[in-house]
Image (cartoon, rainbow, N blue to C red; front, side, top):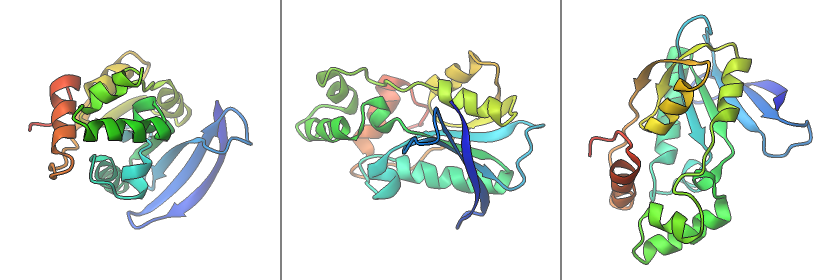
Length: 194
């Protein structure tokens, strides 16, 4: 994987540079780094590693807190010279089609973890190697990780990138997301304080 393209992106949050990372320039769905104005890799950088969630990020689904987490992360990054890495691993790594199938299973009574395993997948099949590559490409050696997920913290702790601290990103539960968030806390160890 390598950096393939970059461009300035003015946004409602502030000025960013978007960088696309892929194995080849023809890749249609590259991983993305949104780098805020004021970014300084010489200090611990506020970083969000966000996995794609089309339903939440794009269409505002209330089944999860993903869109709200992305929104809050972009605000934090803009305010503090941070970076949001957007990884193309929809549905905790199972893809959009299987995620929709998992939603149907959840409507029948399974929780999000049970739905994934019922479909033959791990509870969470995401990998963070690409994010670590992007951090190193940007010259980042230390981060303040914007996350509630201890697996992300641990993945970075096993890498050359130092985790200087964690910035909690707790979104208040809504009626449609309450069970999802409860499962993330109780079965996956997410630090949500519910």
